[in-house]
Image (cartoon, rainbow, N blue to C red):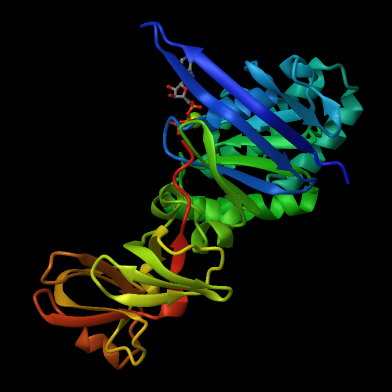
Length: 368
Ligand SMILES: Nc1ncnc2c1ncn2[C@@H]1O[C@H](COP(=O)(O)OP(=O)(O)OP(=O)(O)O)[C@@H](O)[C@H]1O
Ligand SMILES: [Mg+2]
């Protein structure tokens, strides 16, 4: 099947007024399949909006090409591309009725009145706003306005919907609700969404695949599980989720994995293949993989220290512990009912360990 979107070697530079050149996109290549929910994730200024704007045609590429549904659109003006964008600030017409807002693009392109009424009705039903036709936008809640913005963008039946941080103005509870709704809507209408966020949790929850960007480059492209469990470089490991990184060197490698000696002197084994003796590596352990107690396997990473911080965050506790040599380790755990009254307090001694199976080897440098 033809991918719905194919971006090849896209580069975009901006000249700033003070004479500098910013490379907002640096050789970006990306393929999005039909019906896929792909999220662009990265820190402020990494190029997310620029990438969306080059897809929609609001920005020209310096080099590279873009294909949508098999046709090259690289030099096509924005209004001729079969895509639509939902912006962070919904850009609705505040004094117009909901129906008028949603109908707008059909009206300007001369669709008949009866067609418009039918399609607006269907769209409002789809986003759960039937009965709101005659309300004005400024008489709606944030979540309802968001739905109007979605309906307005979807009514023209784009092949791809681009969404630039559409949920960031909403409070946490509403945001979670809208995340679910948006995902369900995407599955229902069956078109590809390219969604921008700098919120990693949002990206993990919603996406089929995530594109992690930094400095205009793709750092990693993969499923939420790939990105979280198997980050390819330190940037991705640190940007997505919390983690402990242990420096080490490969001392022996076999077809089944490798032995690694940490800078602390501890020896462990990892199951990743393809490592060579002498390789410098970082081992990632997520805080939920750090366990309390004494390990029974000599190849697990063990840690003796004192508790430096305890954060209670409802379902779980976060513990930051420090060892005598100054290294620190983060652990999160969910105590069962009996354990709840025995949480180690700040200053108390603690023994922690990471089962060797939980270690993930990071081998790549950041893509710079
Ligand atoms: N019109 C412009 N002129 C000059 N530089 C620009 C222009 N638009 C964007 N930039 C720069 O290009 C880089 C990428 O910007 P972009 O808006 O794509 O980032 P972003 O990832 O969307 O960030 P945010 O999360 O803050 O929205 C930034 O360094 C930004 O300052
Ligand atoms: Mg942006």
